[in-house]
Image (tube, rainbow, N blue to C red):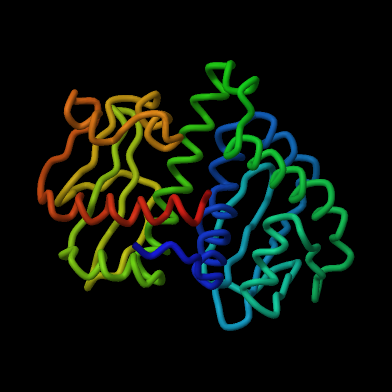
Length: 256
């Protein structure tokens, strides 16, 4: 089994899945929204990895948006390589703006605190998880990251590409009860993540509730056991779900 982590794929996971979840954080967590409102002026940050991914986070009046493949922004953060970008995400290096020096206070007082808060939700302490609302939000954000990362791993990782090559065109829904759904859209074996329900999924992976999601993603519950007892259900083209599950297994290695 392939276990090596490709730094270029990791950069895509870090940008599109991890940083791409900041708008969800701002929308769902009052503390995050308050941080974003510290500076209501319209400000955007572009992340540009040489030879790799690029995207922009835009903020205005306490609302955040993520725009893939868009390099124009108030603050431009270029990175010489995927490894350099990954080092910043892991906290082992500091980014150096190419433009937008006058907005460095925004990086220090808005973006950095939001990144730290997101990490608290994605890598929660046991004390934090004792709070039911925190645990619920942590699970939703973690699932968002995992589903978004699945698209990057399917498109760029060697093992993920093999599984993606077996998936026909159509939408795969990732559902939690009747309250939450994300979509992996497949076209010519290329995956796109949508943080919204699919109108016509060709297949679906359905979790009974957020506790089941948390248990499976956290490694405390066996996905196979949950399938056997009905806490996880599959419908539609099982081949699609089966290969998405393989991709999600590979995602776990990038997010660990």
